[in-house]
Length: 301
Image (cartoon, rainbow, N blue to C red; front, top):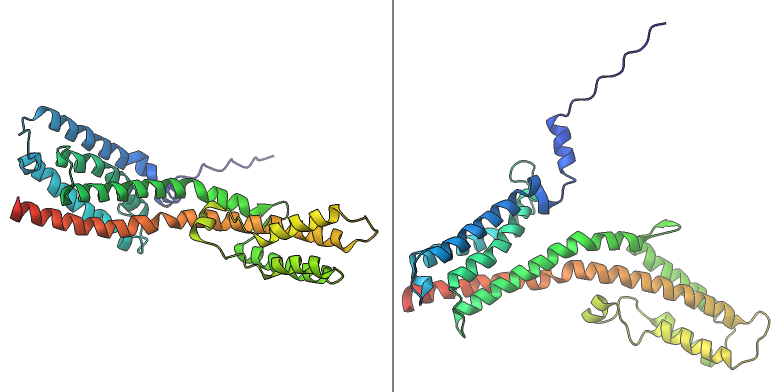
């Protein structure tokens, strides 16, 4: 009986390699190409700073100071272009992932370039202001990279439970459904208890300050206060069969859990976006301070 020959192993094509490479993180894109380039440049610049004889004062006016300043200024402008570049997703040598990897690691390299350019001479002037703004931009960018590397997993984990995944819209719909059930369950209650439930029903899950959202702490949460007060009242009342407070308490417990889940979702989303409210405005402030620094050096130094 003839046997069927085993199929030959599939040859890895360029398209296959490209699909596999899309799963590679941008921080280690191309086997950490930009990490290696940035580390090598940083080491070379530090060595050059240590061995080349340079004036002890006004280092920025030396040939090395001007070189570092020019490279740093051009690099800042080039890295700022990522905001425009990220809107065009293309494959190849300068794909979005390659550009982002270069943006991150050359941004870290700017710490070395900018600090060496200053000659470690800091004071209350526009030059130090430009350096400080540069550091704020870089540190906020590092925070953003950390957020994007860790928080999406937490966001995904918060969306899943025993019944599967749930979206933000479904969380809001679940809260509205619980509110309708609470409203019906609260009909037999006395005015005092009904008023407490009413406060929970009037609560908007999206209210609160930016700090409330980022910390996930809501000190004056109407649902939590209503649940706590109703439980206190129940403890001082005689137990009866089919007590409507039992049903209301169960519904409030479910609402507290869903509200906490939605707020975790909003907190994680908030941190994924919050760093940009520092990074982007400080980038424009840096460019303005950098322009003032260049003008003052060439015309008033």
